Length: 233
Image 1 (cartoon, rainbow, N blue to C red):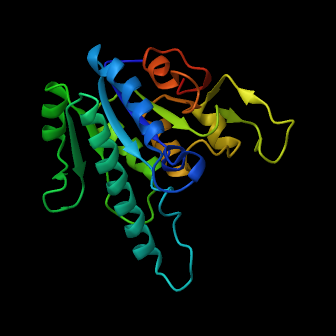
Image 2 (spheres, helix red, strand yellow):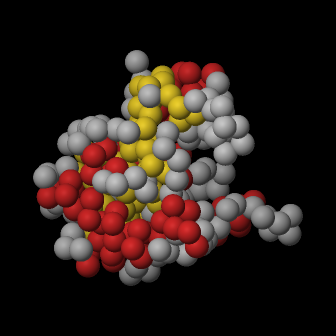
């Protein structure tokens, strides 16, 4: 799919059947597949959602800004955990955040990220954008554009983009390819609207596939997508 690929992992998908926390076997399988691509020379940036710990504002007693900050910290926890599994699998990693987290992460800069990519590390971009009201969809889009990535790969608990919610309507049909303009016009829930518009404006292609399908990440890294390709043409 390119020399530099950004991979978005669903927090819920990493939790497996438990739906919360981590399923170590799932994360170890992700590590195995990512290592194949990293060893072939692909530069890999990773963003992880926080839905296995926190799903946004869940109570009127919590301010939206504070709720979003909890979500940012959930993504940091996820990246620390997954990074350690990757290291155990033999990869070198780095975790960058847009805010200081003591000695647990390093403060993001494009120069530092490029240096780590050049060293062959898998780079985790945790903490979203560092600001409330922006999702991890927007976070990965921003970083992928800023870091001159070739594409964004979205590994989800669903196997592509559908014309309607397949969980609610069994007649839903999956798109093999669709343009980002169609995604916006049809209000399809691929990524949020802010991220979709950024992808359209900066011509950042996407691919959506099922995290739990055998070798789906390794295949996607080679350009073999069993899911939906979102074009920017």
